[in-house]
Amino acid sequence: MAWMQERDHPAKILIVDDEKYILMLLETHLKKDYTVIKATNGLEAWDVIRRENPDMILTDVMMPHKNGFELCREVKTHDETRFIPVVMVTALGKKEDRIKGLEAGADDFLTKPFNELELRTRVKSLLRVKKLHDEIEHKNRLLNEILTKYVSKEVSQTILSNPDKYLKLGGEAREVTILFADIRGFTKFSEQFPAREVVDILNQFFSELVKVVFRYRGTFDKYMGDCIMAFYGAPVQYEDDVLRAVQTAVEMQRVFHRMETDLHHRIPNAQLGLGIGINTGEVIVGNIGSETFMDYTVVGDEVNIAKRLEEMTQAGQILISHQTYNRVNDIITATKIPGQQLKGKAQPIDLYQINYLI
Image (cartoon, rainbow, N blue to C red):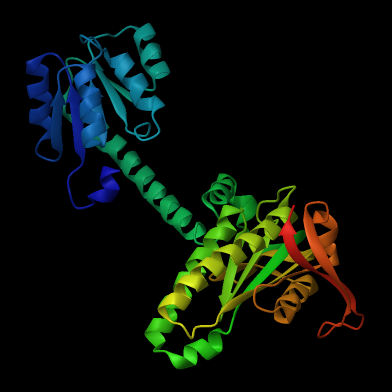
């Protein structure tokens, strides 16, 4: 919007009237404080609006080709223009005409012959409201940009539709599926090459792997050295959260293999792989921290289990817990690895190595 794009510039006002005298009179009253652009009918005005993105529109009602009511209705039905204030400048004084204007979406009315002070006061008041709206829109856009670093655009839109529900401080118990993906061999690799090159390569891998998380509507949690943590089932919960976590892991392995092959052609002694661990269970999920700094994450023993599974994997391997396996056993083929002792757990548990999706 113009206010946000050009903060230091005067607001841009479009005046629309088929009478040259009225156009000249309005321009004379407004050009000292604002940038004035003009149109002589509704059709011409719509072209100007799409091209110039004005901050406000002053339009006559009775005009050829497209009248003021039709122009106002078109402005208010398009997402990119619907918050532009529209003032009807008209000689029509009938109550029915005002109702018709309000139904079309008009924000205010100015009756001919108009008083200069009244004109300037109404313009100033509506532009103040427009500026506040643009500032809110700008902040929402920034918030959306921040959110899309952690979740897909689809999930981000869901969060912004009800921020009180999804962005409140504190946590709640919820079943989620947690995924850890760690690059095997990267520590040794980083010791052999300049730090800048190592970071560039790591960023390339991370960028593509996180895209896979978003593609399957997962929530990116954090980077942990050369490891990625993500989860499914929060802040937005879907019936197929477990399936999408498994699909993410399989797709991650495909993407990583392609990238590692390309890297190996450039750097023959680069030997990297990806190990992935997945677990499903109840955790505490939410914004954990203080009012000034929050980290949207999951905590609990089920998270630790997912991490332990990842630590047990070899390059190219995906290990899942029996809780995860029980939800997807009809769509995957997996090899059972019974009685595995996880660090910090008293009882051994059964694990499953995913071979492929059916």
